[in-house]
Image (cartoon, helix red, strand yellow):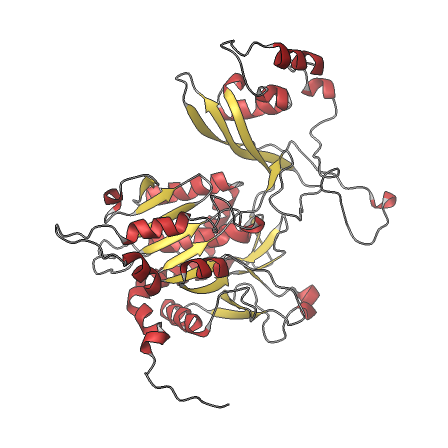
Amino acid sequence: MEAASAGHELLSFINASPTPFHAVNSIKQKLDKAGFNCLQVNAPKRQAIGQLADIVPGERSMVQNLYSGREVLPHTQCFNYPGIRDREEMEGFDRDLSMAGRAIVKDRDGRFVQKLVKIEQPILRIPTLAVHLDRQETFAFNKETQLFPIAGLVAAELNRQGKGNDTAKAETTTEDSSSPHFNPLKAPSERHHPRVIELIANEIKAAPSEIVDFEMILYDTQKSCVGGLNEELLFSSRLDNLEMSFCSTVGLINSVNSSSALDDEESLRLISLFDHEEIGSNTAQGADSNFLPTIIRRLSVMPGFGDNVEPEVDAYEQSLSKSFLISADMAHSVNPNYAAKYEPDHKPEMNKGTVIKINANARYATNSPGIALVEETARRARVPLQLFVVRNDSSCGSTIGPMLSAALGTRTLDLGNAQLSMHSIRETGGIYDVGYAIKLFESFFVHYTELGGSFNVDQNAPREEQATTI
């Protein structure tokens, strides 16, 4: 995929993916088109033998696997309705916002079905206080009282189909629990503005009474676009981390475009897309769950292709020791307005290649053997790389790399494409870095079986080492 066209395709993917639910759905569609088969987590393990497969546990995270190394990627960033925040900072003030997410619908057969929701028109806005009324030098806000979005001006219109508080209270307190219409909770139309329920129902083509519950996330309706004097920049929400999720998926697909791509493959090609990285990953869909170890264990002990081939007892442990994990999360490009915030010799630039991230306090999981492996992978793909080290007097973010490296005991490296304004509702990235990352991931999958053993420095080291003094 040509670099600039890859950037355009990324923007289309982001525009279609305002929530984790939509991102998983968009990737599933891409995998379906590429010939992958969708398997549920509880599918019999024999069903996955020799197939291109993607495994979806909860519609907010997923694993895609084939028969080389491993690559693990996190999260999207969002602001939940009606006030459940996925991250502390929020850049959604004075923006044209709408809602997207999923609704649970009870159909006529009594089945509970998930429906994706994306309301296109702007319906909400979180206004800031005019500067004339607030002279404080730094912008600060109360998360509980100053983050309510404005949806309109006429309360009567919003409640035109609703019931008064007294009526609702009477219904919920006097209804006989033996009634066939008994509901333990108030109906969604009583818990939320009827107009909100109406919008959701219209979007999913269901009756308001069929909606059992929903999870809505606010998103900026301004579309992602290409910018810059030479059209070399990407202006978009959610580059962190949908860009790396997209690049890894396309790299995986490209690695098996040839019908003979897996003929001599001895490794498992796998990527895992996690949710909730920004709030600690300690959820069922997060990287700190047992989801990935469970999937790897099941795949590593699958029976062989011969009739009498049985897996080794320690196949899972052997698999981890032979594997290599890439934690792919966006990196910080040098901001020309704040150049002093960066270590002088490590100022990554957009469109100069994917960034390998290093930290002495193990906030990133990178080490020198990993750098050597990825450098050789990039050399074969003919794509540039950069290095990033944070200043000693500066704080540093982290990724799921150290977490998974510790949990799995697998060799790990942290990298990502450079961007500006990380965690802003409008971020900036480089259009050519998208193509670079896709080629890097494709090369990693294609060449890992050949290269992986060469970079196992513990096994390759001579038995007697002589210390060298520098």
